[in-house]
Image (cartoon, rainbow over all chains, first blue to last red; front, side, top):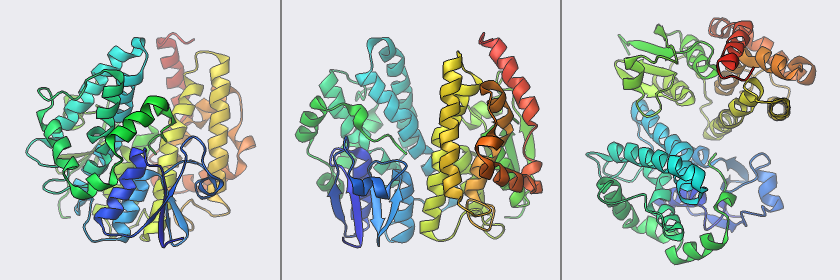
Length: 221
Length: 221
């Protein structure tokens, strides 16, 4: 195995999060592709509690949980930091990442995939989450300021996966006139060459998500 | 770090608020404690945590930091010169963050199934889940005095606040945590010997009385 390896899945936004950070830092790594619905014995050994992607293997030792991995990478390969240097801004970044993973993405998923009964409430919740992120972008190009940071990378779900599940379900949440800053951010983040080359092709993702239960995505931990 | 103004907005039974109190005490920091009525939240709380409107919130020189584990890390990073709460090695830090994250994601929800159960089956389910989580945590503790090894630290702080709720869990689901998880209880007793912990935790019997009051209010009893 290479010095750095990622047990990942091409369709998983959490997995891609890790790959993007490694690429931004110029860290060479190997991807070991996992089937999200059927984790390999290796993956289960390295991640006995979560049993899910992504898992980072560094010099043979596993690091699990996407946001734990992100901080580990930032602290180990210190060039091109993705987390702010000062504690206050770092706390804010951690706050928004947690918000995206625990509030925003679940609300958006429920608003798109949920049954009629929950959909209305979930849609309102999704709008509230997107509004909070819209407000956070005010005066900034990226959540990280002038450069892509950890929050932008965590929000990558909104840049690609959201549009895909909106299309599949005939739902539109991220409307340009309601969320002009977020919409502009989506274009800007997808224009970053490193991010572009790491993300899965849109049409491939649409085909995959049409036939696979999105709840088989590993949940954010 | 001369004249720091620290205000903690909290609700004393909160296992999350307890984390922040313990961290502040471990660092020997002076702070103003303000008790919130969760049914009548103060304008300050709503202003300082507009996204979640939840305690705990640490206000440091007028600026808020939200989410308990994020606050504890913030405290550790700002007052880095005394009583380190997280390991300095990135890999050890990643392990600590993983366990705190695991506790965050699992224990509260399963515990809530016990205390706010709608029927016996739900309480039983909650009890099973809580015991499974405790067994996993006992495994992580191994034969060490604390989760971090020789020193009390981040993971211990993340978990010990839940001790306030043990009596409520035991009484609502009719079981003994001491009988089922003696290693965990030995760790609890060790933590309670620390003044920083004992002064930060409220009385478990009073927590149970509050649970009963809320159960009545919610029409569960």
